[in-house]
Amino acid sequence: SGFCVGIASLSLPVYLGETVQPEVRGTLGLLPTAFGNIGILLCFVAGKYMDWSELAFLGGALPVPFLVLMFLIPETPRWYVSRGKEERARRALQWLRGKKADVEPELKGIVKSHCDAERHASQNAIFDLLKRSNLKPLLISLGLMFFQQLSGINAVIFYTVSIFKDAGSTIDENLCTIIVGVVNFIATFIATVLIDRLGRKMLLYISDVMMIITLLTLGSFFYYKNQGGDISNIGWLPLGAFVIFVVGFSLGFGPIPWLMMGEILPGKNINQESFK
Image (cartoon, rainbow, N blue to C red):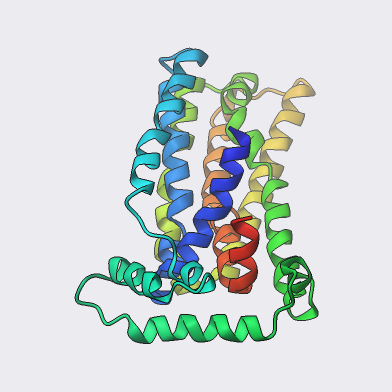
C-alpha cells in the first residue's frame, strides 16, 4: 500500500503539471491534497462506527473507481512528444482542451521545449538533475518535502483520538477528530482561493507561523497538565490548537511542496524520473 501511494503521490502532481493550463495550475494543483483531505475526513467519520477490518475493506474499495477512470484519460502530451509520438500528443491535447480548441500553438511549445531540453541534456537524467542549473530547484523541492514531513502533521492526523483522550478534553474525542477532519478539508479550498493571489511563498510563511505557534501551545498544555496543573478551565485548548494547526498546514506546507515540485523542476527530469 505504501509503495503504491508513493507512486501515486509522485505521478499525480507531474500529470497535473504537464496537462493543466498555466493560468489555473496553482488552483488545480491543490486538488490532490483536497481529495486526500476528503479521504482523511471519510476515515475519521467511518472510524467512529467501524472497526479496523471494516475500515480496511472500505480503503480497499475506494481505489477501484480510480483504476477504472485511469483507462479513460490519455498520457500527457509531453510524454508522447518525448517518445516521438507527436500525433498522439496532438490527440491527447485535443481531448484535454476540448474538440473546438486550437491546440497547435501549445503543441509547438511543448515540442520546442522538449527539443531544447534534449539539446542540452546528457544521456543520464540523474546527472541532468544534479547539474548546477537544476540543483537549486532540486534542493528547494527536497527541502520543502523534508520540512513538510517534520511539521508533525502525521503525528497529529494518526493520533488525533489518542491526543484528545490524553488531554482530558471536555469534548468527545471522536467528535474532536471529525471536527479536525472537516477543518482540514475546508482549509484546502481556502488555499485554492489564496494561492494565486498571495503567492506560494506568502502562504508558506503563514503556514509556518501558524504551525509553530499552535504546536508550542499544545506542548505547553501537556507540560502544564503533566506537572499537575489544573486544566479544567482550558479543556477547549487542544481542539483550538489542533484546528489552527491543521488550517496552517493545509494552507501551505500540505499542498504547496507537491505543487512547486511540478512547477520549478525541469520538465524532462520530472518526466523521466517519475515514470522509471
